[in-house]
Image 1: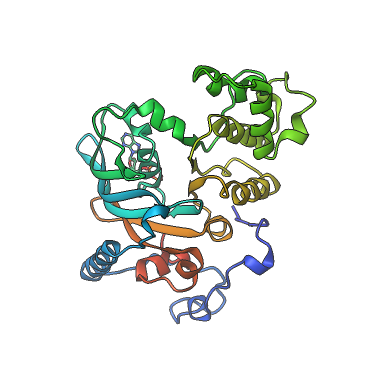
Image 2: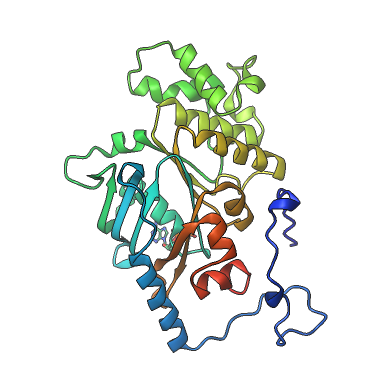
Length: 317
Ligand code: ADP
């Protein structure tokens, strides 16, 4: 299948550096080169060590701008370590993208930010995640309250089988919201850039909307409980290019009020929408680890690590 990303305006499409287009190994007529890299193990280990050393000096933000701080975070399913010793900071009111090859632990890492992995019996973490300075996994922290403050939008839009109105009102009702529900529903739908399209059919089922509208409804539902952070796990992967652009536009608006973390397999999307990008990959033990995190433009134009460069130029992953 040809992956034609028609959603990137030409001006934001990254130009592939000339030296990656031909390298003497590929036949001259080849236009697409996704050559499996035959690296030796020593080279691999050296690059990993380099990545880990850089990880230790990952981006540092002003203390009052740090929403999450991870220190040596490892995530396990039973005895399998899916994510290895990640240390990074997530800045406030910015969009941070997590990219990397399939299976490197992006979703696992994302779900650890609001303790969604607690719902999986075999899952546990080592290391720490601080949220505004407080240990998110400390005894006595209520995971339900954590998930209210740190909302999540999933890959496949998943509105409840209820009306548009009730989808948005659901969370506030459960939380015992006492203000005007009509106003809250309208405000949330406006923030999710959906109000104008649904204001005359609030009693119709949420599931009757288009895929892109359903995803914005899910964003409205997440916003309605007034979170601080929105986690998005490949929120556009089930959407067409136009709906994708709308969600990306919305994300840029939302970051004025929220901190956003997005997992995406689409590098153009990370490049278009995020302020910072963290690139993960996985080692021989299949544990995902952080290679580098940098301002997005820098990561895509001047990656610090060879592994990142190989990935963003399509040589790996
Ligand atoms: P990514 O999002 O980068 O594709 P995932 O976080 O989904 O990666 O998966 C990372 C690793 O953890 C994979 O090896 C996957 O098979 C494993 N994994 C994910 N979810 C579970 C689970 N619920 N139980 C056991 N292993 C899991």
